[in-house]
Length: 351
Length: 280
Image (cartoon, rainbow over all chains, first blue to last red; front, side, top):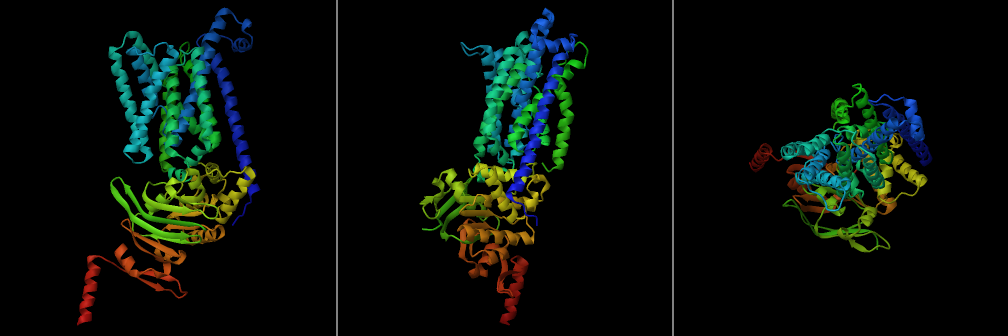
């Protein structure tokens, strides 16, 4: 029998947390590197050194270089970080409250329903009078993703069963909203169809500074609410019954998380389209490195998501010389094998 | 007035079924370890969940939390009050995850509103972990612990809050012999030290007879017996479980349940045969 006193635990726990802070710092440092790499890659051949000095001193660039840097490379690279963080955050929260390692905005159908919501508003020309498109479009996307999220909560509540079935309902929603989006394209104008196609495959290249601002603002707005619930989320990892007996309002927590993730998924989809697997894999990387204490896991998942999408952006620009493959294709291609790996390892750890 | 818990005509309906029927438990007091026994689906868990405020009921369930407190209906207590006074250990053992034992307990303290700064929290947690001999597992993830150890962690989560009422739903189901006894001993000691009371749903009749001072036998949502452990009638066991059993005292004076036959057609005919032999 080994007796340990309080101070032993304090030092062990401090040590563990110190290690986690260091790992968070490492991820952040990798993000800076990846961000710089993202800026210097692209179809136009520009010297990395010129671009990097250009970030700090705009006057050193030619007019063309300055347009490429400030209108294309910087906003694209920044929105990759913002959307990646949004998806990582949404992924980790849904995985915890639905107690399912395969949950994410994409696998739960939140992303595809957000795209459907946005498509409906464009094709049927629904708008809110006096409100600019950069607000109304995310709003309709949010209506779409929120309906999907609430439908999943209602179905899991009504049909009882384990919360694991949530993912199956999510897949049904993906099928439904994909089919409806395809149907809408028949009545859409050529211009609208082009937009719809853009939403179905994630693409960073349409984003400008406004979009960067909106997505970043939503992430920064939602993050404090997530951080306020870290202990509830952490306790929920011990099991739903245990958590509710200790006073975690599990149903309310689930509802709050669905609201937050629907919002995150909606803005992400509006401005860059559907991006698969970042919201699924990002949290798993964070969990592997940092453990389940959500005080560290939540920021970690946001950072991992940002890093993943930033790296995917570099890959999307370097695969074919002179061309940019939509980043959604890259994340899907890389994501599928990782997804299968997750399914197989989770099965072993008695899912 | 000291700690007191009682129910009057407690009823629970769950999706159209009448799970608990007019359960009246007169006045449980501090120090009592009450075993709730009965066959599967008798309503044991539902009774404990109702008393924990996790299950909607009709009728009366009142708690007097001890000196300075008032008699209160459990359903009307604020969640914060209820969580401070009553701790419920669910039947499900904590699930496998990479969460460490220490962090799970720390989160429990935080959520229960009992966190008191890193140092005091660590002292509280180490006290409970040492009692359950879990010290060496503190910094390990739950996924590396056996089912039995995780059940002990759940017990630790309950004791951590220092509640007045413990509601334990099969706390020994995954434990080996030594820890079954150990957890019940620990519970009894806790009740004495903290002037608390406990209701414990349990399947092992011998463990219940020996450790509990009072037994509530539930059958099909009704109270079949409510008595001191030593007064449990083997007739009740026969009726409720449908088995032929005797209660005898073993050499050190503790009561033991002996199963003599399961009431099936075959054993019935043996009994009839014996009766005929007697008459002849």
